[in-house]
Length: 168
Image (cartoon, rainbow, N blue to C red; front, side, top):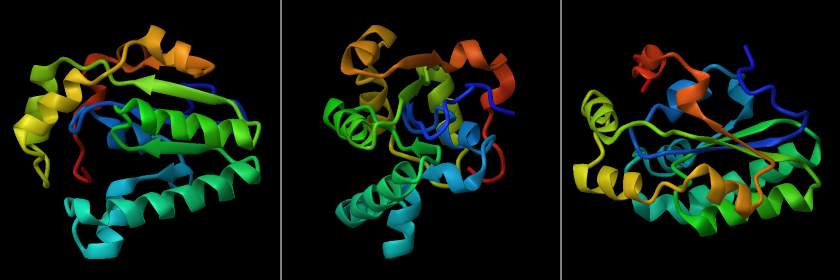
């Protein structure tokens, strides 16, 4: 089920703090659409949490972004994407390949994010969760940055739909 009605060949950036439900949301779409730094860190080091692997994980993500966008295939970027320069890079890749870019903003209350994070297999330290939550842009900022559409997850899903599943 495509809650977003994504345009063909588009890039969709999921934007939210750790534990906000991005991976659970991404699981609603074909697995081949998903690019995720956590996955590539784990493949490089056997640990999603090993931040020293982020540069290599980003290279892998960039290769897959270009491979999919150049072919007009949808891509879902399942990472926090809370930093403006990270979003600018994603928008630049979409522009380069002349593909639309949309954002899903995980406007989930901090208390909910903290509770969901606590229930994960890999719990992210609370201070990091809180900093990422504070860095969340608003919908107007995302439009101003260049996203063609911005969806609030609170408007897409019923309140219980972002509960963590067994996959985390």
